[in-house]
Image (cartoon, rainbow, N blue to C red):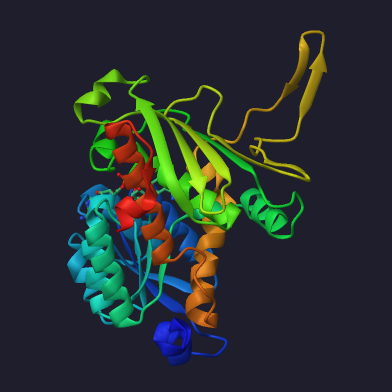
Length: 354
Ligand SMILES: NC(=O)c1ccc[n+]([C@@H]2O[C@H](COP(=O)([O-])OP(=O)(O)OC[C@H]3O[C@@H](n4cnc5c(N)ncnc54)[C@H](O)[C@@H]3O)[C@@H](O)[C@H]2O)c1
């Protein structure tokens, strides 16, 4: 029996009909939480009923904007009996406690990546979700991006044959704030985790081995945390295909987000979105508009689509776009990359997952 059959679509079953809606609580109202809350308010079938953040001004702003009840303490929100689901958008180190508490009160969960920084804790959280029979969708927004979605579909259709090589480039326009980096879990758990998930998503195969090198080149002070801001990670997939992920926390070019897959019948390129499609040709050369800016500008449609998909999980019984197991697998790859960096050797994922 699938999870949907055992109770994951309880919301749909409980309140079906044209006026069915999911009553949401949003935990954490920083960059991601404020954006998700505003997006949820635009999506038919979702209604933001309550919000929570320990930071007074962020909480007050969201309460005023959304007309929702506000809680400085997230546990008060989770204990409300008038919510069907929560969006967890707090710092990564808080996700597991919040998942376990939300599952314990029977609420469905959308959680930003990563689930946690510790694999044991991730397994504890996934067990709580399983016990409660609630839905958990992870915020791997690149799965909902039209370019990467098309890349996956074309590979699955056999457009280039069985892939030989994958290349992912992911560079942020500017470094994250120091306070964010300190609770982020490091480059692999925070940033590359998206690329690990994207690699599994487009290739449709698990990764068997990871090698990584990295350095704090943009901001050498990161070494004190310790963390890095540049990395090259290589992947060996279970079917023998090879991959490389290149990350940097700073790029004057903008938010550089590309993927390329090469196989016996050709190569697929998922290119950057541009601010517009203008091309200016003149005596100095041919100029394109700059690539789309950070997070909400580059992935605006993807962030909306992933929340629509979450609504469809709860109201129509659709499967989550990214599951808890996807979160666990990407965390295994992040841990393998970290071990490879420290021990300067390739690390089999079986060493991490046991
Ligand atoms: N999917 C993506 O593209 C993407 C991008 C950036 C960040 N993220 C993830 O989203 C999460 C939040 O990142 P952000 O950039 O919004 O961070 P942020 O620092 O902008 O916001 C975090 C907010 O959570 C609040 N907070 C702190 N402790 C809390 C707690 N215990 N309970 C509830 N709220 C708490 C803070 O006051 C702050 O307002 C992180 O897990 C991060 O990895 C995802």
